[in-house]
Image (cartoon, rainbow, N blue to C red; front, side, top):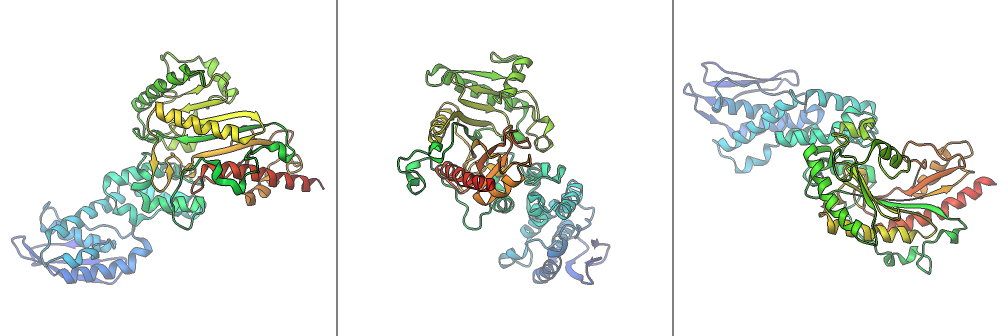
Length: 489
């Protein structure tokens, strides 16, 4: 600990106890009237020694400086400066512009000390939990990349925002990701931390710069000669095909940070957009609202019917990850879904992202659902509001796993030989090297079909173009069917 001793003496004696035998004596020469002159070079030498030796070991445990009672005077500022030195903060960078008497430096360091004190009070339990999660659950990316020094460098209001972003991973140590953005600008605002998490999950080593491209003609080397991604060419029958994207409106907080009023207002905005779709013969359909008392509100019986048909999403309260992130709050207000007249175009409102826009049909040509989704996204954005977008990370989503395209393109396909044991274990082993994800036909954490039917989709979302994803699905199907035939032998 760092203690500030003050009395009627003409100097402040600072003792770094517990971590070293260093003593910082007579750094501050303070006379009885409270005025101070500071040996700046000596201060920075001391800070440098302490910082280099100890901050890498455990910055958080290098506690804070005790403060003298007289608020706002040079004694307090001196305490702040030495406290900051003890935790190795980056005051050395301002040394070149400093003078022997530099109140601005002291004010800055004093502000940083306040942040450190916050770590040891408001966030102590959270930080202790993160340290434990880091050791016990190495797969939790939130904890793996959490840097106490970075957290300490943030202003109190930003510390509070980042604490909300990581809350789900703190509450649920078994999380694979553990982070949910709360505002559209979070990925850029907290880039020093979140970029490491994003790179780790998406396996990106080089520059992170997402490019949006729906133009299949740019993928000629991956397309059949006629440009059609038709699975009958692979010897397959009609399949259930689905392509969806997650989108968020730029003028609202993300779902985890929304108030009940935010959710209701966003739904009202979307209803205005859906009315335009309903009036358009190309779409038609209706909107189903879970919010009580609206012109589109539905009964509990209708809600259950829509959930069973996979048209509507379930109450998210049972999902501890989403609940901890605040995404499941205020249920069922501001939630609902739009469905087109032909039932092949659906928009969820108020789930993990503001919008989940999806197109599906039973057929053989993947281009059909892909092209319709592209057009649908344009129509929704035109009639609703601009989608949240990051220069580096593409379309903004609540979970970093969906950043970039926010796209999931999938088919339901039978692979009885690879699922002969009744599980998807073998199928996952085969699909992973192909860049494919496998899950049950009912969604994540659901069993495979009794006939060996699984849901497969390309895993990549970020730093890959939309056109590349749909081509990767087609190529993945072709390669998977070769593995399925080989498994029969």
